[in-house]
Image (cartoon, rainbow, N blue to C red):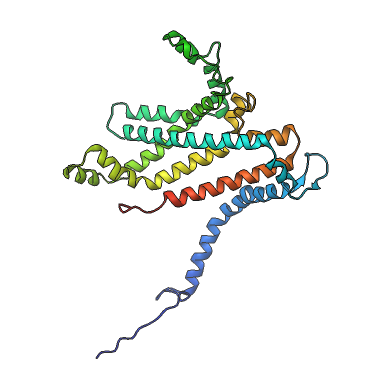
Length: 313
């Protein structure tokens, strides 16, 4: 019997024909290339996070010397009724806008992925609000919602639906939902773009084979389109949910300032009020740490659930 010589290679050994110095050079080159991004990430992300956690353990008004408070700030947050009300509003805001932005974005992507006349113009029109500053959008929609001369009430009055006229930003039952509409209007175009990129990456042969097998349009959408958009959906849903939790300060502040009677108060606006109006930076930092923990946990859960592999992938 012919002997077969088995050569074992440990992971530390270089590949045959590759010099060890060349491998080390490649690793060093990779480290050098990511070093600038790592430095910026440390300065602008990791360092502020650590400073926020450290500041949450002190009592500080921004001017006098800081005093050690330990967990006292967190005890204050646990007893702060307005913060927990704002957190409820924040979670409701995030859930509603995440569902609406992704549903409308997917619908627009499917419609604008078809051969239509003027398709490029419709895509630009849908994406245009994304490029606008939230301050300008807040002022614009405040005029639209104005109960006296606002466009929305004027249109309702003109078409004979005067019974539906409301104080859209002064009614505690409607104010938060009215702001949600503004956020959905602004960001739907971004999610449309994400789904549109995903749709254009799906091979047309899959649809053609399903059509030959007798699959209907709805079956092709459910069995082919949705499974192959899972990775895009994971990114889109995570962006929308994290944005709904942490990036709603500007639109709420410009349109209502958290009122009326805290009806539109969200966590970022109450954190800013606690820090800059009441001068309690330690308590505001404790609120920020709690909000960061909630966002991080939810984002990780979303990525784990939404990025599970599908048989078609």
